[in-house]
Image (tube, rainbow, N blue to C red; front, side):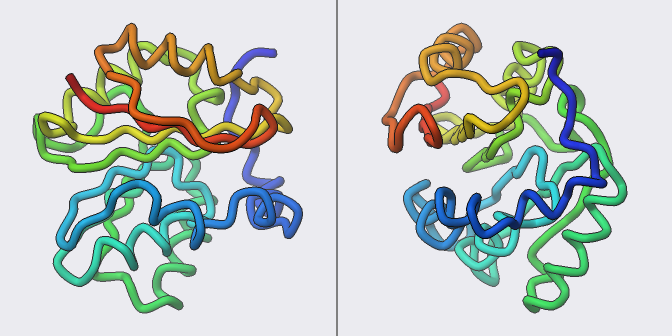
Length: 184
């Protein structure tokens, strides 16, 4: 199917108990290799399902740049972040993946959780992520089989490697997985 963002009318699916059983942010995000004060890019932050955990792990000296193309999703995520008490750690950006408002080599970790399959020009998006990542910065890509444009692990690996990333590890199954890459 053609890649398209999950419509905001279906935002509740991002926080559905069945999904969170497969992809619990509190269990998944610590595996990304966090350190105090990290700068994190979350591309496709949706309702903030992962944003809260990313902000918690980044700590009071860290920063999360939550980028989302749908205003309605940002509104939900912003409320969630405020309720968690992390508003000072998260900067929301209403935009797509092709022109990020970040300096070159300014991000320690980029997270694309259930979003790469929704981006029409994946190569362009990955090139932009690579631009903002610091040398040896990490890229985390997660996919879930229930997504309409689901990408298999081998496809994600090929796309990331073609964009200049080195494979770092894979966790999960074809149903729900997370793969880590390093900027070369």
